[in-house]
Image (cartoon, rainbow, N blue to C red; front, side, top):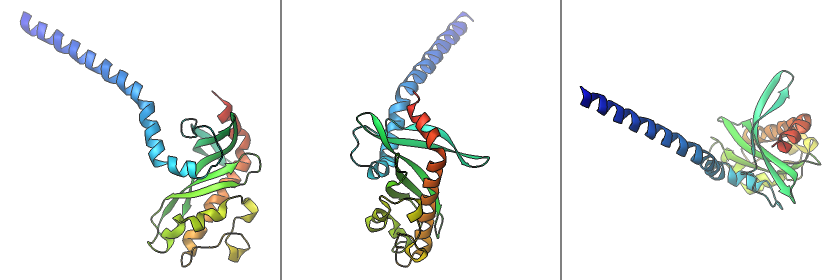
Length: 199
């Protein structure tokens, strides 16, 4: 009987020690793992929509920033700031568009002062190879740099974006999503600024 009690005490002690050790290492590695995940999955798109920054937008990002999408409807965004000499001059966040075959995931960069685009990158999509899938090409993406809300429409609708040939629906989905991202920024610039300034 004494041996059984002794064994139970030893097993309990081992279990407690193992649990505490695992919890400690999980806490220690959580941030580096999240950073690596962001760096590889979203990092390339974030860095592609910025230029002339001297910080690490991935490390400096603010997650779960609540913004008012429309009256009574909120959304949460991870905000990636681009800084020069410690001052944030642009931000990036994700938006979703609706393409021909499904959701288009887009990263937009926005100038804090002008509210215009610093860049745009399509991250993921399910559009048709050789047609809608060409929304990822630089020739399409680079048209967005420097544009404001008033410019964001396809050229056949009076805007400054030339649609990908044979993929009007995919192109329109991107344009509409990017335009909504600028409208969101205009409405919530104060909240974004406060979130970035908070510890």
